[in-house]
Length: 105
Image (cartoon, rainbow, N blue to C red; front, side, top):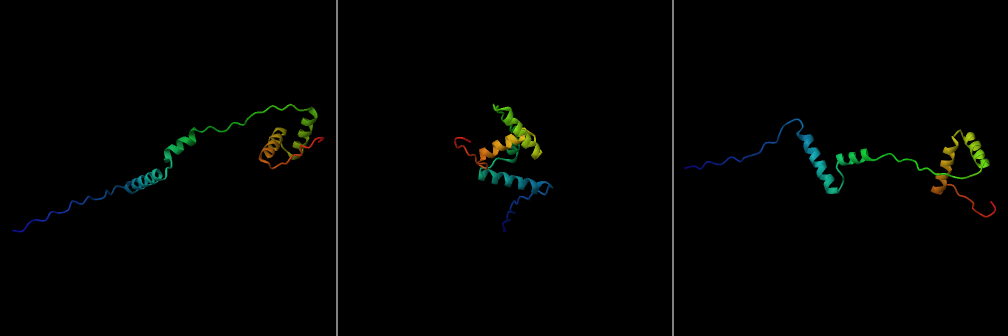
């Protein structure tokens, strides 16, 4: 008597249209987890939740002559004087503009 061989139970791959896309998304998520990266949805939520930086405000006491000189230089450059003042402060803070703080100047 011949024994009947059992046919292996092969699982057929799904053939739906979105199958390859879903597999790709699953692979991407697995890679992100392995690398410790945030998921795309959490990264998007973090980006949306960030508020734009508000400019800091400062008050400076100075003479009318200094303001007049600043306004004249700003007009020559075609800028508002407050923009010129902020730009100069920014350059000093970055170290791009060197100041001579020697006594008597």
